[in-house]
Image (cartoon, rainbow, N blue to C red; front, side):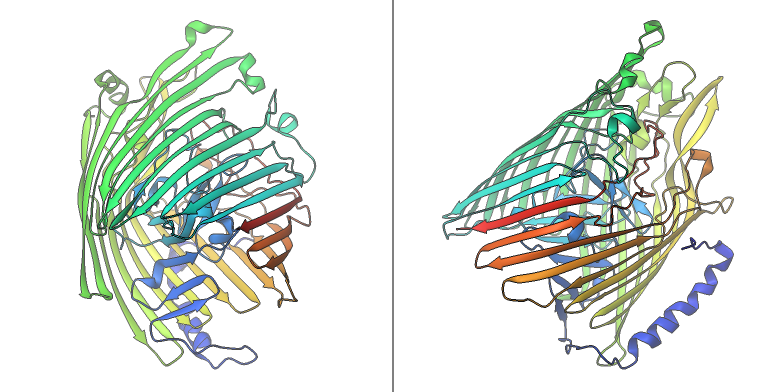
Length: 636
């Protein structure tokens, strides 16, 4: 299927699409069993499509037993970007990604210690204790980033005594084991998780050693222990997570160890929290270690207090790095990669309209970012002569919505958004010199706050929801190549960009389907933006239940992407197709799933997973081949 491209001059032609889609969705339906929508909320399986005025860019998912995060996000515009081997993924939606989207657990901000985001949390949260995942692409939420927010809501421990958990294994092109166990009762819960997996092989049986330059293929292990207690008026949580040897063929180094400590306590809607991550990465598993020694040691600490209407937080981030060519150690570099950076911030939220159905959402705040090592200023000032050791930002979000009941079956919702946020810390203050002629990676302390203006139109009829959006972003931090004093640099500059997209999702009793399209270009020269997701589509089928058994099948398609930013060495990617199949057996409190991922053994690579940043390996990494998976959940 040929990739679809548009120029900005042709965007006006898209205006006819909402009109045609509106007419289609409002026509009488035949051949489908349609439920009469309730006045406010329609429940479709586990997806809740709210007819409230903030729903135009909101998805709430009630987590089912044994679900994976990619299944949670399947029928939403959110996409997971594979970051490494196993459960390491990042977020993408509406042309925005990674740092643009805030990830929280019960409002607790989670941040990466790795400058290359090896330790992202979105796909590593154990869903066994999560009851709901709220996914927002708008600026309506208190903690929303430029591209929205994903918040995981923990389930409070109950009084009933129970033991429950999950055991999962996989084989063929990926060998995995995943086990969780929770003991609960009297308002308390103790949980544990253990995961191990080997480097996968692609559909052509290509290994990490053969294709990605690994001298040694080691097993990854991850374990976690958690405690959660509920009491009158609040709850308290504590956890420890350790990950060892997570491989990242997209990058030049791998995560060798990562330790995450977390604690929080809430009372009457106010949550005080603390988390700390210590991260170590190197290239010692690669053949490249025979030529160059690369190590990064990083820590980040986040603390704050958050409620429904306000938050105050503080973050410290520090990272040391060295890159030493073994043939000529004198050319090596030692970097204070993130020079003891502190970021302090606060926000408040205000809503206008009916208490249960406001039409105007506003948040505003202030952020101060400051480095503790002023010696790094000389590096920034090679490109930004006026660079200072601290900067100020004004996060802002204003979302106005309006809903029209066109008829008893069709709802039209419109929203206008204006938001801004602070540039990410690494975009402002990363500081990495590289040996020889390789460009240094240097932040830009003079970056202005990116500002996003978005218009959305949503057409909803019972089992269908269609959305169109258009966005103009000013001062969007973008990686660029620059030179100064006969040296080459990779740094960040604010660009103006246009983004557009459409999302169509439908869900019936035995079928779900969706299409997502994104488009983006830089306004300065009308050239393509990097990392724009190609058109994707999916079709899922679920059989009627036969006794204890239910069958499932999922088809996924992606077109190729030939609109690329060649200045950043981005490459085109081809179209791909994938089919997953499975069968479930459920009896009382036991569930058994037998599934085959990538059943057709397709050989493909995802466009967004081909990582482009200053530590990218530049190697195209292929997805796993066929994987047989067995998952069981239980409760006593």
